[in-house]
Length: 422
Image 1 (cartoon, helix red, strand yellow):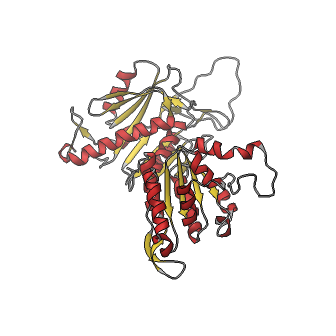
Image 2 (tube, helix red, strand yellow):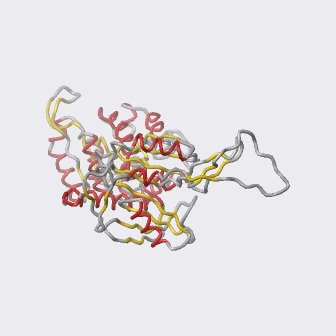
Image 3 (cartoon, helix red, strand yellow):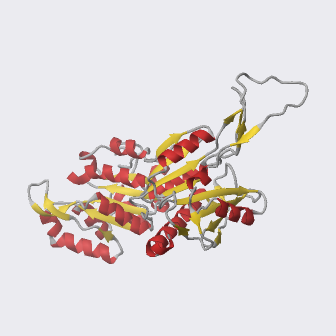
């Protein structure tokens, strides 16, 4: 989702830099728009470095003296149409007056008039300016038009006075953004471990056994869990993907390395999501030197790798109704596995759910168009320990990640509300 962050000219402008970081943590794309006054308090370069994109400071070109062109002339309309929210923080008395009066004499005030997206303003100013009847009239007028106003806090102000006028805390502003955009933060305080990608099992120093997993599904799950507030550890086999922001990544290569990392780091977590495509077999005796081509066929002995998902639930005595008896070795951890199948998806996934004592199995039919390895989309059926099957349509892997997390959260809440089932 895209946000335009308007920064107007007040001493609190420097706090907008931290807002950018927090918005990025929630996976939001931020376009910063600064008034000329704001550039006196903090440089556009600061925001450009934080967002990775240009900062808009002028209506026509980067500077008032820059030649106008058709791109700069309609840029406010392009930004207005592609954003999901206009957030102004800090919002000075001047910008509030412009918004209320319909004045469009710079990029930010023009953007306000041009966008149909929701608008959230966080005022910050001298207490007398905030309490002035003109400012209060403008604020009330904006509220009447549907603008969300984040009231300033009371405290010691930069001008030396004490009273209402301090910019609301960034955490409160972020919570308001989440509410407006419908973003969830329901994994706050939880630790989530996700595995992703393939593993590689050596045949000789040159060749190895692997599979077609790109890691995209696991990375989408790690990113979504982090955006919803979890502390996330991502254990990944070799993939060509950048690590999600603020996610601890542990790189492994073989099934044995992945098993060791999962068992070591998965002890005190709340959720384990096994999205990796771990090799089922490895060479029983890998060659120490490169194997040479021979005239006839070559036979290689393979041995099974250890089943990591089964290892996580050893000692977990689950009754037929899906509840657990006693104190399983898994503790309170909720376990999610994946089943990629080319036939009999429902029966194979159900058997995996039972045999591995998992809470959820995400089943993929690899024969369906849009599902499977190395795609940005997926088609899945969720098999839940309580007997439910939830068939999902074609969607992006990011969307599927959120649907999986929704079911995880539902099961967690069910366990809290029905502790006897544990």
